[in-house]
View (cartoon, rainbow, N blue to C red):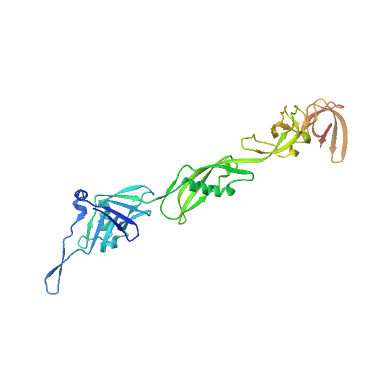
Amino acid sequence: MRRERQTTSGVALRIALDAAGWAAVATLLVAAVAATSVRGDDGHSDTVGPLGRIVVGRLATVDGAAIRLADVALLEGNGADFGAVDLGAAPDPGGSKRLDGVAILQKLRTAGLRDAATRYEIPANVRVARAYQDVSADEIRGAVERDAASLLGEGEQLRSVDVGGAARIPPGPYDVRVLPPSAASARAPRRRIEVELVQDGNVVATLAARLEVGVTGPIVLLRHAIARGAVLRREDLTVEERELTGLPSGIVTTVADAVGKEARAALPANAPVTLTALASPLLVRRGDVVTIVVETPGMRLSTPGEALEAGAAGAQIRIRNRNSQQEIAAQVVERGTVLVQY
């Protein structure tokens, strides 16, 4: 016989009992309680039956994180007094576990169960399943897309969100909380974030989501081919809005950063300009005759010299004083002029 009964907690209790099942139940677990004799006022014994009944089913489904007797049993009379007896932790949502009948009986006896007062029927094994609900990947993906503004930087667009699969959580209302990416991956084109599912203020599931992010912005391009060693002019350059994902690092984004710089190598037309392709122009070349300016706190003088190294503005190079033939270190300050300070 299969019966379905609503427990006091509102959870549907499924109890499966049949003749073959009870034949397998140990006599320890099925108590046909003998009547209890009490003496009346006339001195004769009256027969009083049990005051309650506990019938534990072989199959049950629970909602909560803990299994109570009321979740797995039909309780009558004083049997309801044992409804809150804790039978252990529930399985994960969607999972199941087996409860040992002997262990259930021991818990009831510890809670005060007496054979004379309560009839009980407990099978050798009880299979308990945990109720669940699935939060779909589409719903999680939608939550990430709605929070995209907080996950992306300026000029970035969310290309795709990979969630993987649905999340299984307990029944009931829930919130989806999208966490920001780590600092290490905050600007990477592929980012991993975490999504939390929260019920009653508690995180009941955490999922990983992978974001594909595109970045657009201005880049500087060459209008025409540039020879090695040529100094870039404003008319050599143009600015366009481009997809930045996949471009080499150090892309020049403003014309001012490239004008006046020297090409380290020949550069083709329409090529993005990078900082590594440019160098500050040489103001002094090896073998140039230069003016050595010597400064001390109370004196300034100049003398001719010869550059033994090439250098851009600010570079320290070796210079030979033409008068003394002494080699000294000097800083390039402008074309043809170096500075020595004491």
